Length: 120
Image 1 (cartoon, rainbow, N blue to C red):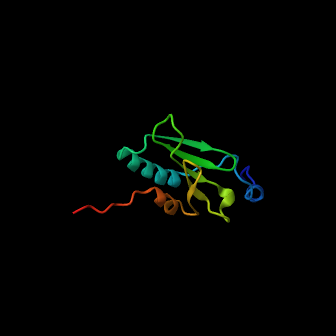
Image 2 (image 1 turned 90 degrees about the horizontal axis):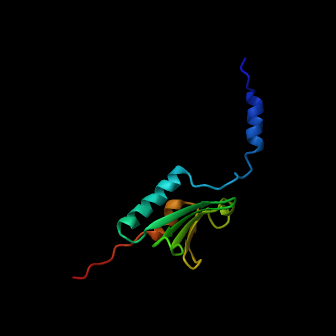
Image 3 (image 1 turned 120 degrees about the vertical axis):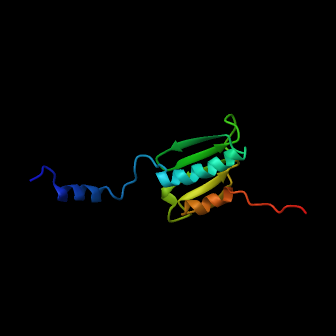
């Protein structure tokens, strides 16, 4: 007989299942999507720096043109808003919310450059 109690461990997990973690974080898949977008803009010379912050209610990924400026955009994850406005949002420099939603890929599309028509 092993020293662990499966029933007791399950009860502990279920009891804490509804609580929020100490800090909200981006998971690996979310960071891959965000850093992919960031890399494309860096390659185009548009973005130069970024910052990541984690808090009790939100996680944020800020994008800068220069490290000494305010962020151009901030990608915010707020689990408390999942049923209201959406888990993710993209906020512009002045605080204007450009896009909200529960799917990160859809929200990040607002930051993708659209191809322009070439003059003939």
